[in-house]
Length: 220
Image 1 (tube, rainbow, N blue to C red):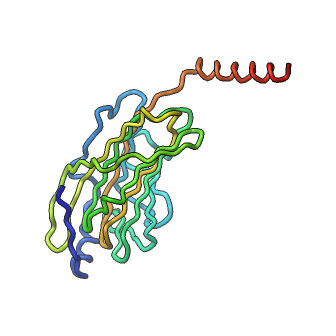
Image 2 (cartoon, rainbow, N blue to C red; image 1 turned 120 degrees about the vertical axis):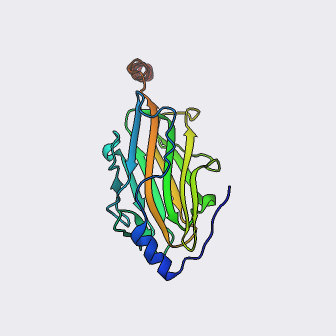
Image 3 (cartoon, helix red, strand yellow; image 1 turned 30 degrees about the vertical axis):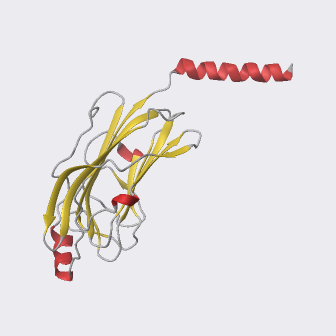
């Protein structure tokens, strides 16, 4: 995978912060996109540059369940609605929490311009309803669009797919973390698509009955 590392001058940084376009050039959709028991959300226009949540704003059924934060501390919102930081590397966190389900698959898309991501630091974490946490491999990234911008880094559209079906317990919370390799990255867009199963009420009832029987035996 070719990675661009470019030092951006002041004039180029001003141009990047004012002209970067929101959205994807190429968004790589999952195989389960739009099917039953799936949830999709896209972020095309951001409103909070630092330490506050951005909610999915471009269709889908995710609503307020998904959130995107930047924790670089010095970012700002550009005229096109992107998050840009000329002083520090962007520190992007995407979170999703769903109650009463087991998330089995996740598909993340990211569109950036300027400084490239630090691919070695990308993290994806799955947390179960009982608090167990597991980090999944993020080395397999699909580069869906890649264009070098002379003097301004590169425009990249990337995606990651994760299979969570082998994780014991019900996965209810996801965290995806991506950092820039240096200042002058613009976060143009993100999307998150998940598939999930719903635990059978019968199984939950049996677990409850088993617990009651155990308590009765101990009392006896």
